[in-house]
Amino acid sequence: MHQSIAFLSTDDLEDYFVWDNLLIQPFSQHGVHVDVISWHAIDIDWSQYDAVIVRSTWDYQEHADAFIDKLIEITKHDTVLINPLSLMQWNISKRYLQILQTQGITIIPSVFFDSVAISDIYAQFAYFDTQEIIIKPLISANSDNTFRLDHTNLMAQAGPLSNIFSTTPCVIQPFLDSVINEGEYSLFYFNGEYSHTIRKVPKSGDFRVQEEHGGELITVIPDERQLSAAAKVLAALPEKSLYARVDLIRNPRAQKDDIWQLMEVELIEPSLYFNMDEASPERFVQATLNYLA
Ligand SMILES: Nc1ncnc2c1ncn2[C@@H]1O[C@H](COP(=O)(O)OP(=O)(O)O)[C@@H](O)[C@H]1O
Ligand SMILES: [Mg+2]
Image (cartoon, rainbow, N blue to C red):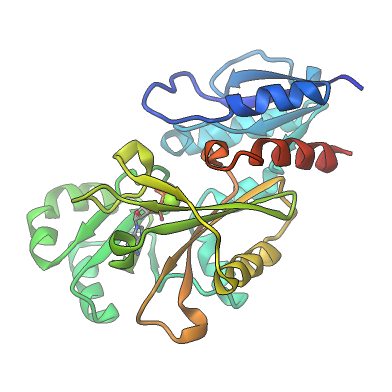
């Protein structure tokens, strides 16, 4: 059987790590040809592809409406958009964390705002009983516009913060030191099956774990508690996904059963780290074939 798939990418990947090339050969061994196409490209006949898989669309968060419009356009063609459009629409704003929380998922303690004044941000130190907080846009990736704040640097950055967050919906959380001491864990699931796990540790002096910001990646084996926290998140998603990445962080102040807290579940995710687990490309290819069957 000959099939053809498009990986949705972007125009300029120069500043990013992309490991999707590791999928091309295993797909080809299963008779599947892959084209890589920027989501900015126009006049593409998407129906020539059995499926369009959102992969390295790294700048989507800067043009979220145009990105969703492009996804909608793709679904009007005779092809399968992966992940499903409605799942990606659900996932594009971190508001979904609030929904998951009502379903019993343990997320990092969070307060959500459509817009904030500096005084609202300031009030969160007392609310969370913490010396440091983090503020991030609800639509974000790659730690864009994400700020780690204590009382002093909040005041020092009041200008830029109020420029951004007076009009940008955001979430504020206590800053969890464990991101620095231990890192953030990403557990990958392909077509509902567990694949692999990595731990991401920021470079010295930074709090952002992404390798684009100098973070270090380590392949690890998750413990039972992490696996069960991630599986619970997967089960709570509104639809089946071809790929899901569950990002967990330790909150040492939480009760024993709630120690592993959800940072994000990524369903529009460029980084699946196929380079970190030798068998993961084949697992992904097999999962795609099963998903499409
Ligand atoms: N509550 C938190 N405590 C400590 N670090 C955080 C916290 N929230 C986010 N971070 C850091 O900021 C990064 C970006 O936040 P995240 O929620 O993953 O947004 P995105 O990846 O969509 O930009 C995380 O990978 C982590 O390094
Ligand atoms: Mg993240």
